[in-house]
Length: 155
Image (cartoon, rainbow, N blue to C red; front, side, top):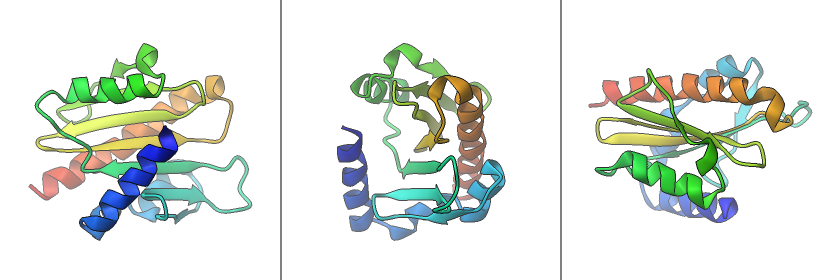
């Protein structure tokens, strides 16, 4: 399901504005992760650790994530589709509304909306999920704050 979602996102991005993947820069992501990253936009918007890094980290995001009238319901639906509803929780202090959740594979998502703009951020730090959940949420929170700043500057 995840592969289908990101393949669909890549198709949508290729058909729409190619600058959408510029929501975050490699400098932004590197500063938050504390290591160099490279852009890898073959399957959507993504930054990866350098090939020899261990653990290998991946940050993906879906810009222009649906910011419908009921953003929470849409975010919960995606969490449900990816076995993450039991971990779905509000993330206070970021944007107009933000939610975080994770699935059994160790992937953490942060969905954030500011005004009519939103993004879903996917965080994989390459380690066993139970060990780094607070760190993954923190990385997602920092990226969400950058996104909200970007949205605010472009309104």
